[in-house]
Image (tube, rainbow, N blue to C red; front, side, top):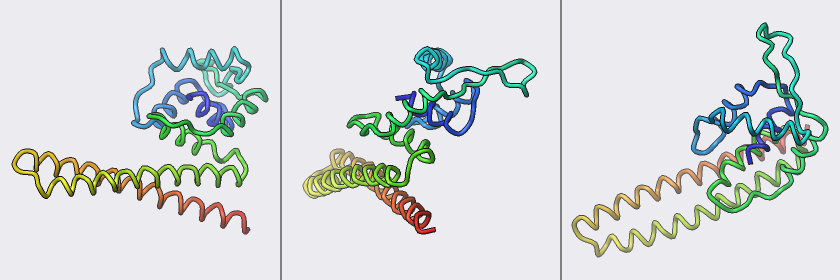
Length: 184
């Protein structure tokens, strides 16, 4: 999963392991700090598979090396971008990784990825609305602490509904931007 983001970032420019570690951590959902114990074995694996090579940074007096994507790495990146996003807890991170690499794929693939994401957000939205309605129905007969727990659950579900709606708005705006780009 992390390979996709790293290769995507290297499609635009060479980067140090330190910089890649920061980009990776900021792209994860939820955001978290990536340790050297995760990052450097991953970079080593990508180097061993021929996806990247390390080159010296002529601007760095400490001779820090930069990761550089190879033709093999580019092919691997495009292959990963083509794969469907699997269902599961990490699918939001995978979508975000793909969004970071969309600049490197054609407009049709960008549109398909965004439509898949919108469909997933709509599916989630439908479920959250059903759960909210169920909790509202239960609330009418609940009393005391159970009523308070149901209200808290409803508020939590409402946050999820708003997040799904924001995702859909974001996709609509992004698709509009892509369509405007196509027309020019």
